[in-house]
Image 1 (cartoon, each protein chain N blue to C red):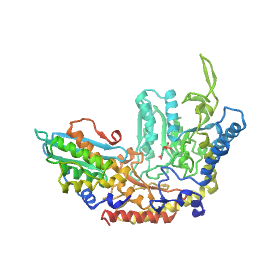
Image 2 (tube, rainbow over the protein chains, first blue to last red):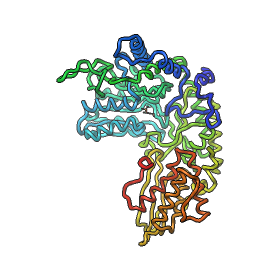
Image 3 (cartoon, rainbow over the protein chains, first blue to last red):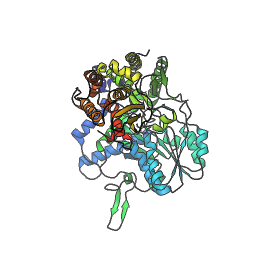
Image 4 (tube, chains in turn green, yellow):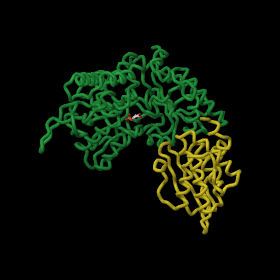
Length: 406
Length: 156
Ligand SMILES: Cc1ncc(COP(=O)(O)O)c(C=O)c1O
């Protein structure tokens, strides 16, 4: 894989930020977009625009076909069995809310238990918290150790006859921990408990095979996979989508509407009410093509090389502490520098054209557990190079110079 | 944008060794402030005498250099001021951060104004304004005896 060639596909890297070349290390937040994706969006609006599904004119037929082509591409991308198992939402957050709400409505009653973990993004906690509030459900947190790994034996101990669902991240957006989902699913299967996987960070970085994982639900966001904003994906096993009630009501999700009776559309329309982000979903197909053009194995190999290089270089800088040391780690590196608050780090790095994130990264439970208020995070994408890491390290040293710490 | 304007020596110095840290003895007002976006926290301890003059003012907090320096400088400048003077300094400070680069309050001498103006660089860094203002809002909350925690997402 030729990273410079790949980088050249991203127009943003030919722009100057604060007069400097951009070193973008915030892909966990959202990735940059290749020209093919940008052009697709533009072309659709310029030459092909129509809403889908409602009209029978040629533009509508074309748009509808293209929309469904993306569904098939997503199905193949995550190796789902049926294309009806792919539901488009506005983001992963909405996908998780869809499951929490509809599953909760049907299956959760007072005293029932939901297991999540201390690694979760707020998006995979707050929707379950609503069930705690509305249904008096109980949320149990599977603990993590200091390395940032979920302690699987402890998770297993939390399972009781009242456990109704387990919701867990596939890849931590703070520590880069790759969670052994199959082990968790195996525990859940023994008690017939469904498992939801938050795949926001795994989808852009590792191979996804929902059949192999055998999870019941898998959610991710297109904008982190080199795609446009406004596209979320929910994969759910067909039996769940057939059984669960609809989420949002309105046009397109209905079959027959009478004054005294409404029936719902078949899958996947049952869960896609109203006008969808048509252009974005259609454009997302280009993002999948982009991922496929690189090949997931090449991408993983490249990102591992950059991550290992970054870890090695960062560890050599005085007073830099890497947060967590998971068994299996992807390119998400959170760190602190003694004597400098993460916000000051982010502001100073920005002046050198280095974009990182500072804060709690929507994981306050994790930060509290680790006794941290905030961390700085450098996250790696397919376009990052060793040069980027060198510039990052130099900028960190500059930070220490400004703060007179060496 | 100019980093040097943001991270002036005086800010770095106050950030590193904040003044008036801890709980002041006999405080009769206190208030907490929180910035949910970054997790910065401050707890203001205030002793007002019976004429509502600031007899002592201290703080505890966790945060970036800007937020610690701002709190530290505030405790120095507001100490000994009356209720109204303190509020006037506060609005002058907020005006500086948001609009002008000057401090217009009549209740500070020139050295004190210069010190406070060291924080004016924040204006060029919109994401950091709340770091600088958190302790001030929390101070006013303590001054006015409000019970609710100050949350930077709920004030402008
Ligand atoms: C692990 C994880 N889950 C969920 C989300 C939420 O994604 P979105 O904001 O696209 O819904 C994110 C994004 O930051 C994430 O990293």
